[in-house]
Image (cartoon, rainbow, N blue to C red; front, side, top):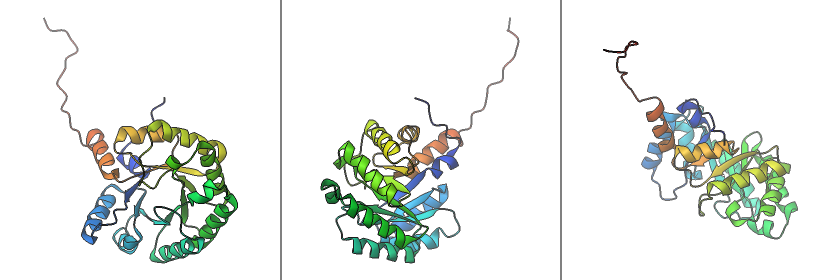
Length: 245
């Protein structure tokens, strides 16, 4: 396997969507989370709708995008409620929306309903980024293929593997999902979520073909990498080019 060539911590952070969907988090704790996001300049933060306005305010002088969730974490809400949630988040300033696909519709192979729902959500958000969570741990491979095709056909920019509320995939399961998505929905981008807690795993996921990683350990991943690669100071020992007698 060819190791993904991350040049520095800034590049690594650009591949990570730093996530905090703790439903018990306080405002002060969220401010601390956003402070960490700002320190390392992640691609985006993924947070609950409660704190989208706060995030837009705190991150206003950065390039960090603010993402939030719709139909989370089960995805069984009506299309109308998902569209309404989406509109409210866009009005609050959200740049990205992660919507959970209706798993019942996947089980019943009602892909026309799935496509209609995603299309309506995308139409409600204009040029903002739509990511569709398909919860791959609950699906068979053929369902993953059909779900990704539906997401791509309906205008979503990303397909995402998990809400983070299920048992994380093993690295080989994630790579299998990536391969399925790339084969059956080659134009859609891929975001992997769940169980990515260190640089080694993040590197493997990127090497496997993911476009983005979502992780609530994003700060620790980048900080440890930065400490190792950029903050380490070694004083070289003096050497001579001639052999001592």
